[in-house]
Amino acid sequence: MKYAFRRLSALLLTMLIVSLCTFAAFSGISGSAAEARLGTQATPERVAALREELGLNRPFAVRYAEWLSGFATGNLGDSLTYRQNVGELLRDKVLVSLLLSGMSFALIVLCSIPLSLLVVRWAGTSLDVAHTLWNQFCMSVPPFFTGLLLSWVFGVALHWFTPGAFPGLSRTGEALHFLLFPAVAIAIPRIAMTVRMLRGTLLRELNRDYVRTAISRGSDRNSVLRRHVLKNALTPAVAFLAQMMAEIVAGVIVVEQVFGIPGLGRMLVVSISNRDYPVVQAIVVILAFWVVASNTAADLINVRIDPRLALRDE
Amino acid sequence: MNAPLLTIADLRVRFHNRDHDAVAGVSLSIGQGEIVGLVGESGSGKTVTAMSVAGLLPRKRCDYSGTILLDGVELLHADRRILRGIQGRSIGVVFQDPLSCMDPLMKVGAQVEETLLLHTDLSKAERRQMALEALAAVELPNPERVYNSWPHELSGGMRQRACIAAAVVIRPALLLLDEPTTALDVTVQAQILELLKKLNRESGISMLFISHNLGVVRKLCTRAAVMQNGVIVEEGDTERVFRHPRHAYTRRLIDAIPTRDGRRESA
Image 1 (cartoon, rainbow over the protein chains, first blue to last red):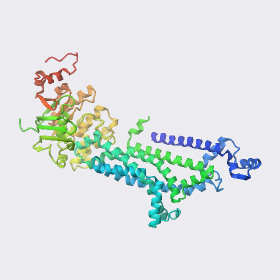
Image 2: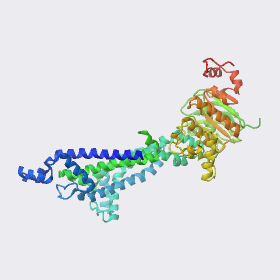
Image 3: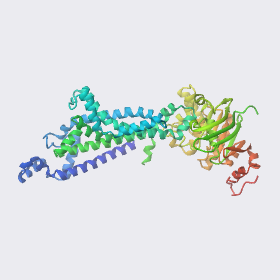
C-alpha cells in the first residue's frame, strides 16, 4: 500500500508539473488572447477593457490556481471561438475519444495475446520468417492510410457504415458500430508491435531455468506456459501496453480527422488552427493525464503480479 | 547386490553445433539406495549425462545413442509422453542455482506441490499437507511460513532446501543433483550435504551427485566416477579413488581440493 501511495503521489506531482508548464507556456503566448478575440477591431482601449474582463491582469499564480481547480469544478474558462465553457465543450468529446481508445486497446489486447502464443510455436520454422515479414508490413502501415482504406472498402463500397456521419453517443449501438472501423485502423500497427514484443518476451521466458525445472517435474509445454511462463511474461507486457496507450492517443488524433469523428483529437486540431488557447491547453493536460494515468495503472497492476517490484525502488 | 536402479550403457551425445561428443560412451550404474558421485571439470560431460537421465536433452539439437534403463524402463529413446510420466514421479532433479530454478512469481508451497499436482489425484489439502511434511523433512524452520513465502524472501540455503523438498515430495526412486551446493557458501554447503545423507538414510532414495569438487563427493558418496572429455576415466569406491587414484586426472582433481593448512591432505 505504501507503494500505491508513492505511485499516486508521483502521478499527482507529474500532473502538477505538466499543468504548470502548459499554463505557463500558453499564458506566454495568450497574452494576446484579447487581441485575438477582437481581431481587426482591436484598439488599445478595447484590448485593455477585455483583458480586465477576462481577468488577464491578475497575478499568474492566482490565474493558475483558478484554472487548475477548474479541472475539479469543470470551470476551465470559455472557449474563444465558441464562446462556450471549455468543460461543457469538451465533455462529450472526451467520452468519444475515450471510447475509441478503449476499443482500440481492447482490440490490441484481444488479438495480440492469442496471436503471440501462436507465433511462439512457429519460432525457428519458415512460418516464422513469413510472420516476421507480415508483422513488419503491418507495423509500417500508418493508421490514416488504413483509415482511408477502411472508409473506402466498408463505407463507400460495402455501405457497412457512412463515413463522416458519426451517429452521436446517445445512439450507443450505432456509435460502437461506427467506431469499430477507426479502432481497427488504430489497432493494426499496434497489434503488430505488441505481438513482436510478446513473442520476444515469451521466448526469453521459455529459456529460463525455472522452465527447465518445471519440465524436469513432468510438465508438458502447455502447462509450462499456463502455469509459469504467462505470468512471468505479464509484467513486461502490462508495462508495454501502458506505453501503447500514448501511441493510441496519437493514433486517435489522426484517425478522428480521417473518419470525421467529433472527438478530442479533432477538437485539438481545430482549436490549434483557431488559436483557441483555453481549449488547447485543457486538451493538452487531459491527454497528458491519460498517458501518465495509464502508466501509473500499469505500475499498480504489476506490483500485484510481482511483489519484488515494490522492493526494487525502496 | 541386486539389479541396479539405474543403468546407463554406452551413452553418446553430440550437439549439432559441436564437432566432438559431449558424452562419448559412458556406462554407469546406480544401485538401490546408493549415492554415486560424478566428478569432473566443466565441459567434461557430467551435466549432459545427468540431463540425459532426466529427459532434459534437447533432442532436436543433438544426436544420441546408447541406453538408459530406470527400473527396466528405457528412457533415452522413450516417447515424450512416457517420459513425462517418469520425470518428477520417478526422477527428481535439483539444479545448481536455486534462485533462477524457482519460478519467481509462484509461492514456494505451490512449487513444492507441483509434482503432486502433475502426477497424483490428491486433493488440495492433501497436497498441502505433503508439501509441509517435505519442507519439514528438509529441516526448514517454520514450514508453514516458508510454504506461503515468495522465493525471493528466502535465503540461498533455504531456497535450495525448498528445491530439494520439491524434488523429493513425491518420493521418487532417484534424485539427480547437479552441483546443488556450488552456489552456496561453505557452511550452508556442509548442512545441505548432511541433509542429503539423512534423506538417503531415512528414505533409501538413490542419488546421482554431480560436482566439480572431489572433496564434496568424498563427504557424501559411496562410489565415485571421474569424467574427462566425455568419458569416465576412473570409477570405484570413493575412498579407494581418493586414496589410490589410478588416473593422472583424478590426482590433479584431488590436488585441487583446498585444505585447511594449504597442503595436500595425506593419504
